[in-house]
View 1 (cartoon, rainbow, N blue to C red):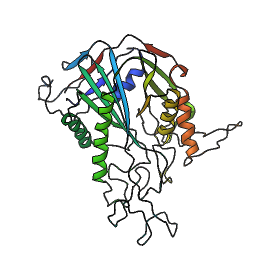
View 2: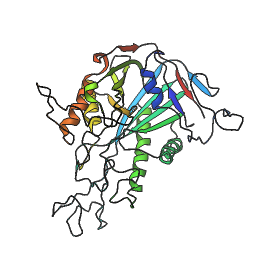
View 3: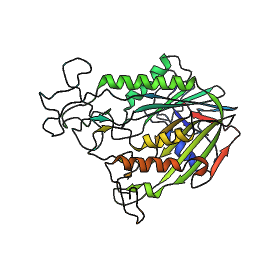
View 4: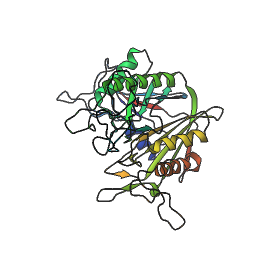
Length: 373
């Protein structure tokens, strides 16, 4: 199973392809247990850039396109405590739920924003959501994790685990939604800057669940047609760093089976999932939760996958006019779930054939192209 990227040339002139290709682009560190073809090396024996089509190691598949999707929960176990003095921190002697019976309070440190932010409650589930695209002999898996980020060694472990389980996948792409209200998976947001807040058992669970989602998606393949919609949502995106340069572009890909039933949607949007701000203490995937929930309600039985687009420095909803009233004044602010709902459901409302821009149906299957390293 080579480690590499994916480009789906549905409509060569559509900028929607840029988002799809960028999401699945290879990284220089990608490795494979057994490369299927000779490496493309330069004079100094370094691997050359991989661009499909055109690179000597590209593979192109033809024929009907099949897609499967699945979602599996990666919500961390939360041991709540009684904050007797109301300081927002666990203090020795305060009562807590000892769910694992080890006699020790096990915190869930929320990643993003400031240090020392232990979760107090659960608002919504966190997910590993997978798509598998199959055409001819080529199988590509994409997993979107509700995590702030995931180091490359963990990505490699997911790929190797999928290979060990016997999944018929040529490539596996793993990416984070970059939400700021889930368990720390990078070790940067513990009680202090001198502490490492990674829970290795949780990482192992995330990786095993990612493979579970890939396996389920692989077992749910349906021949599909594709509709690509691309538009903008300027009222939902702001830039919190100078100079203010806002890219509000979003892309939605809808996969419909031959009976016209939507099996999956894939949203790519460059807008930091941080509507809840830095004072929130509830585990949540932020606005992607509301976005996916609404899309799945619009298309019953489908699986909605969200992937972060170009987040820049710094596309986010923190400075937008949230939930404007008739006079254009904000009625919800960062830290309110109402703002996450306004952003997520507002974006989902601009779905598919109702997006502010052309909804481009591609009935003839595109060629699925992939670059092998």
